[in-house]
Length: 182
Image (cartoon, rainbow, N blue to C red; front, side):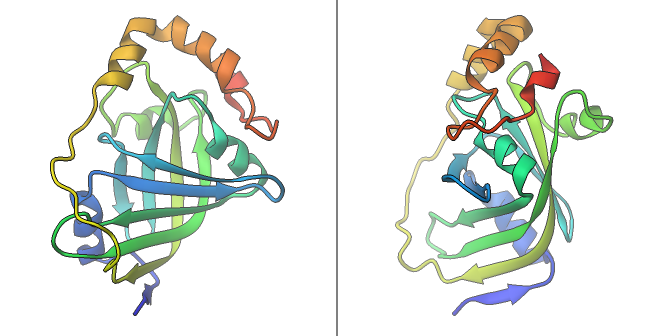
């Protein structure tokens, strides 16, 4: 049975911080819904109603484009160990680009280098837990070094060129705002 809460409680935060993967969902008023898995050391619970997560350079930039049109965001974690649970945080988010006044403050919460693209600052309006009984267990999850190595090889200039080529628009053609950071 699903339960809803107005904030992230200590038990919720402990569960979130124990997970190695989370999922983010966003949608513009028109076009496709985006759902992406995220990992690495890229998420911080900043308070009972605030989460920040680091977005690293990738093949698309859907979240940024969607948030320019509609600030809705859902984050989801599910346990892959012996204790089943699913937790979702619903709210509104803003994109913090590298040229934003609070970029350094938020980006410095996370390790990494040139792969850092944006930080998303989520105001959590509701937390929901559900059983997770149908989620399979999985052993041996470990981080992949591929993205960090790829970004380090490209360097800052190479990353910006990649953003210019691949991250200016969503798959539906909406602007992502990355051009201000080129």
